[in-house]
Image (cartoon, rainbow, N blue to C red; front, side):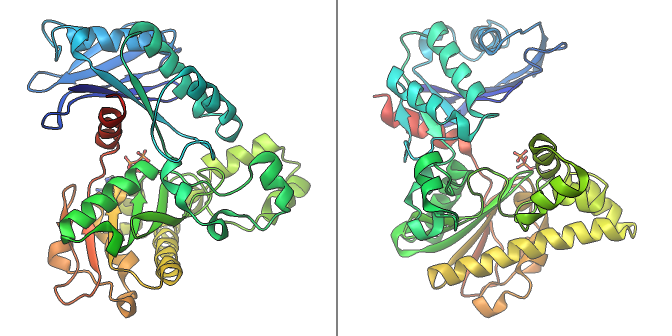
Length: 397
Ligand code: ADP
């Protein structure tokens, strides 16, 4: 069975065609600048040269059309005909309280997704456009939706409720939802497999540290707390997002600087985080380079990031009454030994250790804690596409 996994952003579309017999990637690629000038698809099939297709793409439907043509192209394609695409799995950002797992897409499901749009106005609309475009182009192929929020629907009330008037939760759905669920779920399952234990018997803290970053507490195989909230702005310091701040800063800035809601959204989502502190970049590699040259604000940004992750690990160990496994994943988690070391230093009292030699690794699965450390610390590259493909296979039968 071949599953096409689609991840639609506002002007981009990532895809992978996965052969579920051996979970190998037959082709993958990225359509960029959809709806704007200079649109392009970068496509690569297994064992073939990468191709760059420059063609105008006014809409996601046109982009998906080009992707489908690329997949069956006699020269650079991966399959002979579209008949070989057996199912499509879509990433959907926000499932609100309606979706606690992946679902087969029907008209009712699409309507329910639309009802969650208020909660993710930037993300859900392109996800839904992608689904509708696929439905038109591949009308007989079953489709499945996998939600970033679904995994965290197991959080207990005490984790997800905000200390605001309870009516706001009932009326507007203002509560904590959490994101990156597919990634946290994947690495937690891999961590259990690597330790040879059942997920049910483990307390795991997963740290998804990329441009967007979140930490999740997973007890007995269930997400019991996570650092992102109503939106992906809460929690850790991120590339450009501020994470946890005193909420009164917003009203303070509105009064002092006459800022509007849109100004604040922009400030907190696009101009803050390590970019805001360092003034250098949102990319950790640039900041590390500057810090090495003696740039104090760059160093402060890195220190603040690491310190915040450390605090979350400590608090989640407390929330779960202990921790057996810590996992680092995503761009920074998979690649930066310095940040991993800094985050874990001082956590020896919890049994969390780093073996410098083992930690000298990047981009592959590795156990990086000391042999005598009671907590196993892993680097595990995430694979959200595979998780979506597995759910799609399961649900499209
Ligand atoms: P997202 O999917 O959220 O955009 P990724 O998981 O791809 O992000 O992570 C991207 C981030 O990972 C980049 O901002 C970069 O700072 C960081 N990163 C990647 N490689 C390294 C590295 N070798 N050292 C430090 N940071 C890295």
